[in-house]
Length: 145
Length: 220
Image (cartoon, rainbow over all chains, first blue to last red; front, side, top):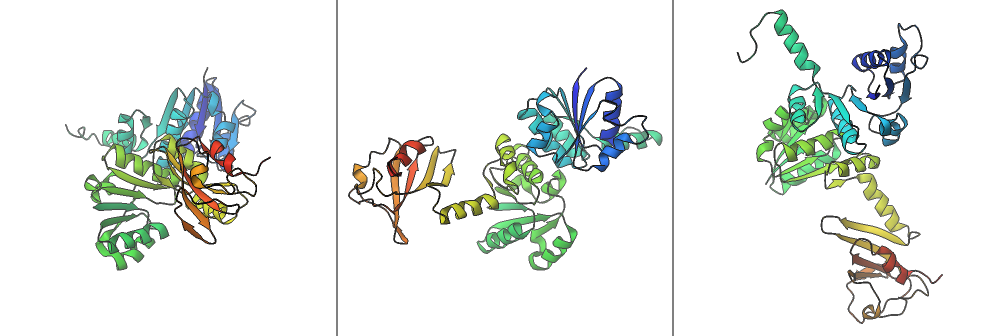
């Protein structure tokens, strides 16, 4: 079991949060918008807290909010806000200031995802996946082939 | 010199104008369409439309040959990333970052984005300078050079009161560089007498503040 801190609870972040909690992990979610808490509860049998989840309202970049959400004890940090730059900044903060062992970052821009990955960040680029899926569906030959 | 300025707010726009007036080659990148169009009339090809945190936008602006990158957007994360990319991907030699929220300064330092300036901090320093309640005001920190300049008010009855500058028992690594008296300042000589009510500027190695200020504070 790991303690996972997820910053940014949109469609992706909230779904990952629920799956990780269901898989038996300890999950804390940080988001600036109280609506994202409702998204965690929607369609579920119990509330997010009732199911054992943690939720903190706060800005991703605020040190106090990160600490309140438990960053000092996190085994895994997931940066999944809607902003690439926010994600890349807080991921490096998690890595360098709080020494979180595993840091995953969502980056929509493939170019920056690739470059930061070469700098040692574990980036996930949904755009690249979407491109790949479209091309696969259309049975296009792989790019560059 | 070629400068790329990212962020066409008041700071970025006025800086661009000043740099152009000094004959510097500048490109200003602005991500808001309305702002870009307004500046386009005045600046023409100098201003480019785009998200200055995207690599292709920076490359279109010619960041590869830039001597200076100035990141002055209203977003601290953007400014951090722009400088990081300029330094580590494009080997730009000089960059300057704006800190919008002084609480984020720690992150600029964490990622070694220096120099980072904050208008809020500058105004705070001016307030401290104007309000002499504070015994000591940090005027300048040069962390790279391991030097600081501080301003101290000479208190009535302190050890320095009535002494010549050369008689001051200043610790090794500190020197009085200026005396402010009667609304004006001058560089003291060895036999300049320090009086209560003067303000002195002291240049010192970091860590000596306590020893230095002790000379100018009223005896307890």
